[in-house]
Length: 411
View 1 (tube, one colour):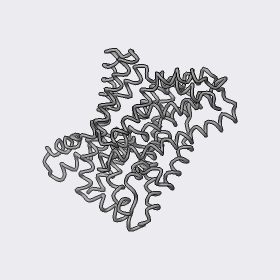
View 2: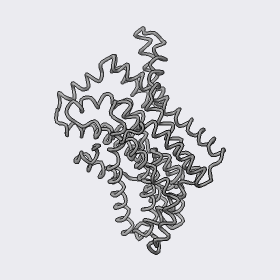
View 3: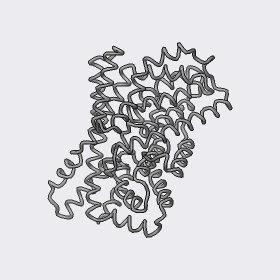
View 4: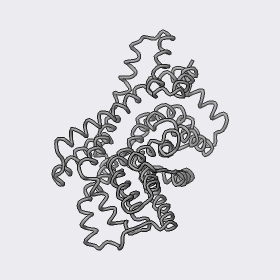
């Protein structure tokens, strides 16, 4: 019966049903056919949302929206341009480096594209960059957010697997920095080949300090969060709340650009985004409970371990599964549906659950750049209609910390 529920979900999804309906309808039908109490639906959904770690999700979404409305992204862009604008690639290098700084406070790819990405693409087009190249760089660099702490997908992964969220967030630092370096190297090679514009000279010390000081509060945010969490001063959820208060303080007191209208608009946008995520969380929890009752994960684990018990081989298989899933499902849905099934046999075979979390989320982020989902590509296309993006650099980065697990494991 469990595999029929899975088949029904796949059938409805391939027919074009919204993912929430594709999850809920087979689940409701299962409850009716099995003669289970209908109140079970409400019980499982309520139980799924009664999660303290998930409170961090709307808080970090709120932080990203507030940064886009209160002038913080402008200051990040000016500092990034001053620091790396002279490098070959100019504004394209600024795009990548600025995304790393922005991701240290938002943790969401689409928040990066909607705020900093709009500034970067407009500036690149004014300097004569090909709109397709501008959109591609913006979409690719935006995937740094879900890897670098704070990361909403890693928080969801941790809540599903009971892996330490602090360890996951710390483990994401090195892969994100590595991806930034590889993206900047790729931009450098492309810029040299095509002669892209860059800043006329390197900045003076005064110019660098002049842009660093306004952007310094935003730059310090990830260090404060990671340091506080690793020191045990607060949990990831408390870190999200502290970050929200911190952003309100620096944008309202230091920058003096925050208005009640900004707060209200950020809250409305957060409510919309959070509701879309949490309804999927609730639906997937019910779906996962049905699969657990029908012992689908155990059957899958036995079949997978019967085929191979080599951790590296199993990790490669998981890479392929999550990469393909990322082409069709958003990261939250894929994490909630697939991780409870795939993660247990890999952990039993000796794969580090923290490393598996980083590899899983990065594979799903590549799905934002590839068909069929193209979330990041479509978002950048709204700003730069001719944009096209590839993910070869992402594959290079993924291969690096797949073969060198210490790069994606917490100390």
